[in-house]
Every structure is written in structure tokens, then in C-alpha cells.
Image (cartoon, rainbow, N blue to C red; front, side, top):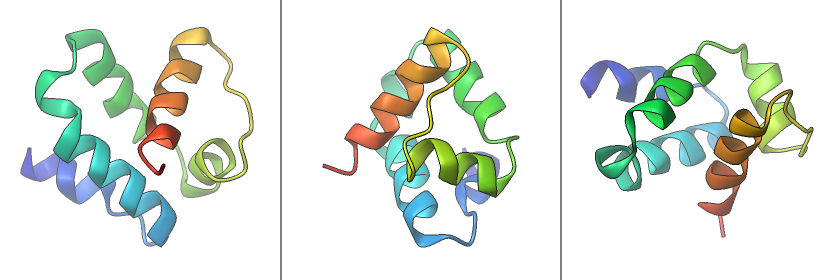
Length: 76
């Protein structure tokens, strides 16, 4: 999990908080498909992550949108 924790640190406070909170609170019980999607999500460039998580831009697939909604809900 150390490698993932490092990858969650993006240099933008809003992204850092959402991604590390997911890793801490959701990752341990997340199903394998959601874990794989999260790892793929971390490959996106910071501006795209910010568009999804901060600006609310919709995702391309329902699975991605479900992950984005989950991540954004952690901020509440």
C-alpha cells in the first residue's frame, strides 16, 4: 500500500485529500474491480483528475463515474 499512498500524493491539496482518504477508508474493503479501477484512475494526469473530482466533469463510463462519485462523496 506504500506505493499507492505515494501515487495518491498529487501536489494539489484537494486531490491529495480525496485520494488518500479513499486509500485509508475504502481500499481495504474495496472489491478487486474497484481497486483496479482506482489504480488506473491514478494514471490520469492531474488536470484530468481535477476536472473529474473538483470541477465535476462526467466520466466516460458508468464504472468510472461510480468511482468518481464515491471519491467526491468522501469530501462530505
